[in-house]
Length: 326
Picture (cartoon, helix red, strand yellow):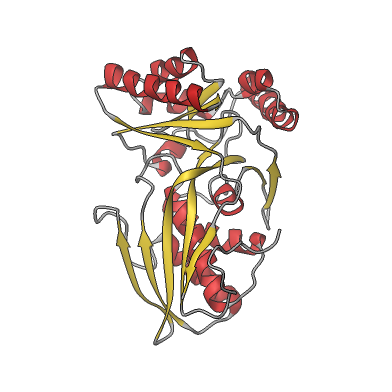
């Protein structure tokens, strides 16, 4: 995979400042625990990396987080990814970092991954490092592992590359982009709840029953075939999670009713986005997505007494992109 596209109209390496947008993502998509992810058009995080006197990361600021994201470079996902790029390039340059959070914290929409991806892409463009997407993903995962507590790329890969991505485990990780039906629109209900990714992973344990594994493997393989064939009936059949969602459902009050409401309103499939609490619905067209979103928000209010922020988005085919170079 090649370099990240720029919409700035200016060639990489000629700037003193680079601003990058990286989109939110829905991960797992039912059976694809840690291996499937889908990039959304919005929301997203932006990271600015500027040249600064000194060496390494000389300053770090964060906005849009209510003061909750660490500003210690050793604990911040974007900063750790930037440092990963500096180390990979052997660069002694000084940089200042600004992180602008657009993705809600602990929402299950890949916020730490998006910050890490944006940081890595911005640092590489500033230094004209010409890292390919595999190298950028590895740098982003340095930050993602700190932000989410696990070294997995199911959010970072689609945020970087765009579209529906299958991540093959190993080093280096491999991203396989799969075709997405043109009519697909994603509805997401993000309730006023938080689920910390590390805690949600801990409850899963390290083993699964053989029967659950067989169901999961079949659904994962079927979903890949469904996307290639643009087979909506098969998508509906295969967006089912026999492993993580049953264990995590109790972390999201009202989840089962919210999921059912989306399907009753016309969604093709629905489930937890990552570890939650956001619930996604895959829909065939804008009107179906709007109906599913409204139904999910109503169900969260009735079942859990919480309001929800709604996202209705097409799939983001571009992934991370350079917005501005100065």
